[in-house]
Length: 326
Image (cartoon, rainbow, N blue to C red; front, side, top):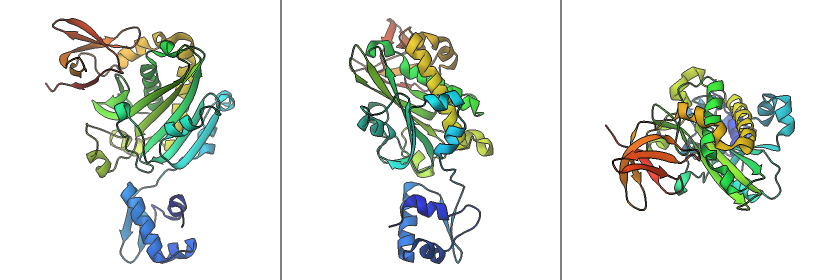
């Protein structure tokens, strides 16, 4: 059976290609071509059928290319990067790193065009239609233990916001503890999973997903307001390889700073990008839900919430939060 990437390489956004031509070039039947096309459509790829003409892509796919990503990195970073892989399909880029964590070097980076079991915070699924977002994970090793990594998700959020701004995307905020938003609509998410020794050394697998072209079906399946770069930038949206290179650049730089100085080096910039500051929140704490006003974070990156009974500090592992409509 022909693979999905091979079929996509034969399709074009410029002109339709007939089913007969596709079948001949792939050495399969027209029925097999139709089956592959339907599978790709179901996965979320924008393939149109034009009666009497064949199939065409509704938009260029802008596939990720390792050589293009590497070429956009600085010479110094190209030498220091431990690994760069692009896969057509994975269960999860973070799972791929976790499976190989003992053998991979520091700053190993993995991308996937689509994920079948992408993970979000608290076990939620991260929807990842083919070429519809940027699914990426990076392995970072630390000499110190878990305690020195407080605030890491916020520092990574700052790095992702910097990468988006470097590609022309303005107005991105960091929403505690691990989202990036634009006008309170989710644009990207971060998931950090720790391993190694509690007191060090340890490692972090940092998963990042950025919405680029979310199909209507994917939007409907997400239980919160979302946005993507198509909506925010239109024709000026960054190319995927450009964004991938900017993400690697900003993340690797931020992780080196964090390894030395911790969250303190990012506290001021986080405060400028804090999407929750001043918002009324409902905090669903296992000890009892309550409401309060978000008023920044403390030196460890814990959320500060002002309540009628005084300020409470919220750790990201304990609760989920949502803004209260006004």
